[in-house]
Length: 316
Figure 1 (cartoon, rainbow, N blue to C red):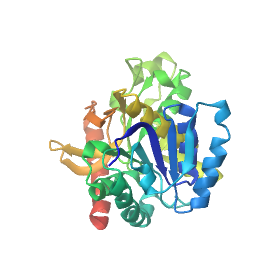
Figure 2: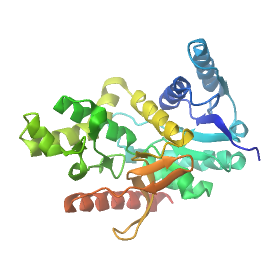
Figure 3: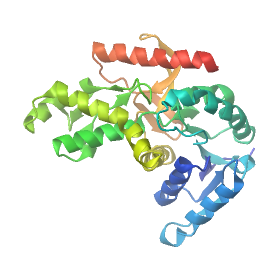
Figure 4: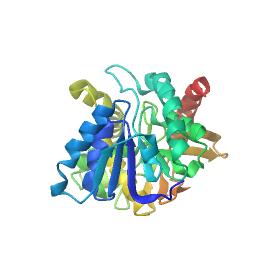
């Protein structure tokens, strides 16, 4: 087994999300080697060539199409392979198709790479993170999903627009399932330490309930809206993949709402992957960050976990 190359990433799946992620990772300058793996080798070769041709404008890097053996020393293996979400199809409709795909690819990855981090991006990400953890046999800290990192970015973006402030100064999380049962954690949301409702009033907004419902619904439905308008979502998730890889490779200990397997005996959420804020660094998930939730949010989180548990019971 080769020693891990800290500057190497493998991207499995070269569809819209995989190729956009590969492009974002090339732009990041985090890696000096990237292997693209796809069931359609020509597609992987085409993407590798296309991205490579822009390297004179970026940082030196080797980008090539390969097979699973080429991923053996990758520090991070990004798994985007899976059937895409079609218009009118929920994320959970995808489950059975994508579990079958994971049954073939996860053992192939782990046959060669036993020390890297598996970053699951394919949907439904929470279910597939649980499946990947089981199939890989990796420690749970090294298998996690992109979770609600993008939903949280959408949430911060929309709050920034609503309040006319820089979205990077907004601190708020979407938690639970990356999907229809996700929860906007309003009770811990703030702008630079000022509770969200207080800040809204400072900016002349007083219809809190109405605004909260509209913004949470817009976050939840934004993927469906994008899919309806252009067929797929890929730039936002590609930037999320880049952000997560930054936290890992630079050992940033950043707090990101990734999807990881929960063991919260107090709430009864146990053995299911969903998104909660976590400290992410070179060892993967280095600990969960318990954010303040009100009773309603706790009940909704429990319901989200139960939704995922039901689906998992059918596929595992």
